[in-house]
Length: 61
Image 1 (cartoon, one colour):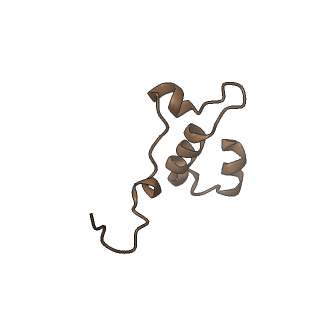
Image 2 (cartoon, rainbow, N blue to C red):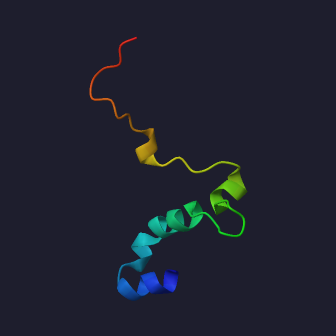
């Protein structure tokens, strides 16, 4: 996976390592059925998009 990615980004591959790390750690293994992040931490990583509210206005309540 990394070799294929570096092939397309010869000069900037090191700048994209955080994205590669996230992709590898959050992908579910066919063998275990879990992601590496889940196996190491006991939970799936919370992505920044999951933390954002989708509400357009103030919440009343």
